[in-house]
Amino acid sequence: MNNDILNNDIQHFISVSLKTNTADLILKGTPFSTVDDKLILEQIEAKKRCYKKLPTWFSTPQIYYPNKLNIEQSSSEATAKYKASLVDGKRLIDLTGGFGVDTFYFSQEVASTTYCELNANLAKIAQHNFAVLGAPNIEVVNASGMDYLKDRNESFDWIYIDPSRRDATKNKVFLLSDCSPNIKTFQGLFLKYAKHVMIKTSPLLDIKATLSILKNVKELHVVALQNETKELLWILERDYIGTVEVKTINLLKEKHQYFNFIFSEEANANAAFSAPLTYLYEPNSAILKAGAFKSLSSQLRLAKLNKHSHLYTSKTVLSFPGRRFKIAEVIPFNKKALAKTGIKKANVTTRNFPLSVGDIRKKMKIKDGGDNYLFFTTDCHHQKIILLCHKL
Image 1: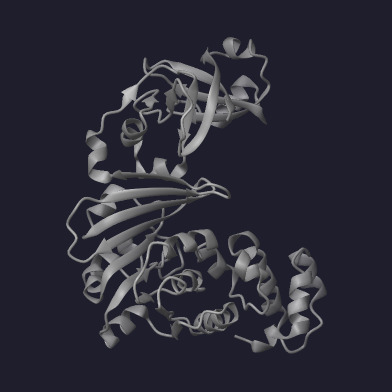
Image 2 (image 1 turned 90 degrees about the vertical axis):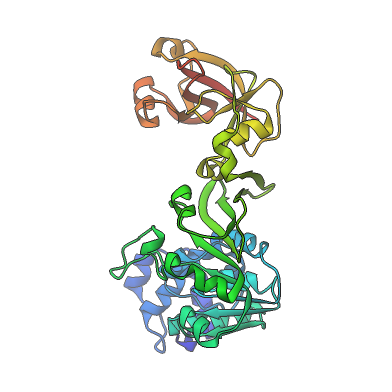
């Protein structure tokens, strides 16, 4: 960490250069001799990535940024706030601190927070930023979180861990056994030192397979941001042996969408089926990832179009955790039938359908966009259909 980066002139240069092409900056260079040009360019590139992802950091003066990879790997501000809403108590330890976004928001909910980070430079950056952001209750530890946990032999209300999803050659990995530290190996140790453990994992993990590995799982939170699933949060509780409640959330700019169900009950839940009625419903990505297909039907009293289509329908409009549409027309799947509608431009979605969106656009000569929504799917009679809809 080069403190000269925090010089007012350099900070001003970084701010005014955010919209400048990086290639032009490399050619032109910077007017500062105390800091390497590469480091200043690194600050510019990293800060650019914080504009939407970390607006508090972006808008706070004197923030020091790590390289852009650390920004890409960090939680977004929105998902970090959600994680923080799940914890309470007096003491929390973040074993894999990184840029410190999660730690910062945990510190607003817990009296004392410990941040552990093996990378010395990253730990210094986080410590500086915590001070700038006004978080005095965070203890920064430049050490392996696992080593610190075992050496100190202290108790915490919560342990939080976001295991590294890159191997020794920096390639991405997703299985828990390939991540570092190995959650499968150390989960018993975590519960020895804390009553509650929160583990953040990739949304690509298979939920059923992971539940066969993890013990004492009380809750699984499937977190989506603007309808893109970002992370799975596994909440472990010491000695817990009950059912696993799956909580899905889609974080939106205005009103968030929630849907909860018991994982073990999904297999035996009863789903109703129907031909398309007046309204169509498309679940958000968190629900689709969680696999709450029958539970959604039974809880909300909606009918599915087909066992594998994961689209729902009703006669009257209902509140729904996803997108809602009014069905204007049900069209048989053939080129002539669609041509009669005169539609040349539409938003196309496929569910349980043999052709891709690209293939459909090419075959049906439909451009992207507009106010019409076309769902290519399979109905309860196993017929291929097209639903012409308008978004509510």
